[in-house]
Amino acid sequence: MPSFGAAPGVDGRLDYAGAIYGSLLAASTIVGTSAANPADTNSAQLLAAVVVTSVVFWLMHVYVRVVGNELPRRVPLAEAIRHSVREELPILLAVIPPASFIIAEMLLDAPGDRVGWGALWVALGGQVVWTWLALRQVHARRSVEVLSMAVSLALGLVLVGLKVALSH
Image 1 (cartoon, rainbow, N blue to C red):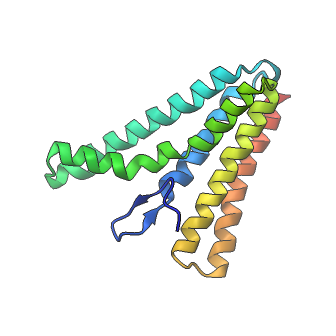
Image 2 (image 1 turned 90 degrees about the vertical axis):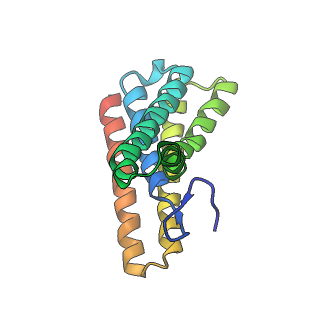
């Protein structure tokens, strides 16, 4: 099972939850940044928004885990930080595919509306892939897989609908 974007969980399994969340976070940031004026979207601004937002949310998750989970259990601060950074890393790693797409499109001097839409589809594709990997890892029943994938796709389609609505 691939480990990119997933941290080992308590039971030694890879934890894809953070990557699912991180992909949805990246997609939401792309919608918020590129929907208002899609033709005027600056790819560098979009890249900065996606990366900075992901880093800020990742740091917030690390902080909350340290303060809310680790320190109350009397884990030494340095160990608490190391553990929290490792556990929350999938949130940050999930931004790599859409950020890489934006960089590639910047190099090709693609129009902003194309970059925004493409990055959104890449982020949502990542969300679906992370969901699928999580389900496969736990050998979920077919009914759970179908329901989970439907929820993942529905969340993505809400963001697509929002982008369409805000772009017009």
